[in-house]
Image 1 (cartoon, rainbow, N blue to C red):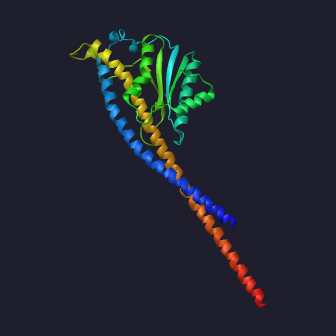
Image 2 (image 1 turned 30 degrees about the vertical axis):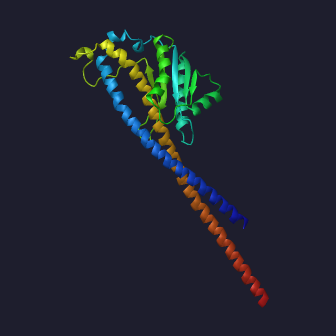
Image 3 (image 1 turned 135 degrees about the vertical axis):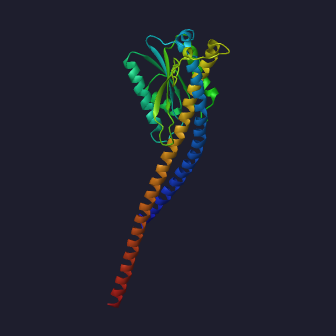
Length: 291
């Protein structure tokens, strides 16, 4: 029963694979819950920072701060690309890399010089395979990014932008909408664009008493706002990775279950056919002896 033994081996292999994918699905579900909590905790702080910035911002003050400077033309831009360190998460990394390549092609088509800053082994390996030069690469940021990680990523770029070495800084990340929806997005980090207020009012049209002055508030607020933008991108990408991995592993587990059902039916049919053949041979042999 060579075919039966082969089918039993395949059944055992698929069962072992299903155990692995189910375990990975459970681990990703647990990590995704914690990552989603970090996203939920980061968003109110970002909204509050943006609200304060929008109330304090005026075009006159913008001229005094390099991080608010808007160059007449973008000639040199930096792109920070966030990817995962591991695979087995469906098209998560592929979508991020496709988005980053599309933005690079778009900007370089307009004559912009783009330097790459990569975070995550998947992005590093991909651009290394393409032979694309990178300004920096990091794989030490795990699935629990901190504000210190964000500062270490953006502080040098912030200083270079303030010094006029860069005209813009962008970041490509996975925008976390839900466990099933993490579309890639590219967001402008520098220059800082003050969020628009929901009602009629810039700071000039509002009756505010500022202490300390608006200049002092902006001086302290702008670096925090930039770092928080990067931190939010890091935690959303981490949550998106776990959501994509959970979905991929659930699909793999479901596919393994369907394959097991098919293999077991095939094995049972083959075994039934063999038993029927053996019975027929016994009956034929007995008939021959009687005859």
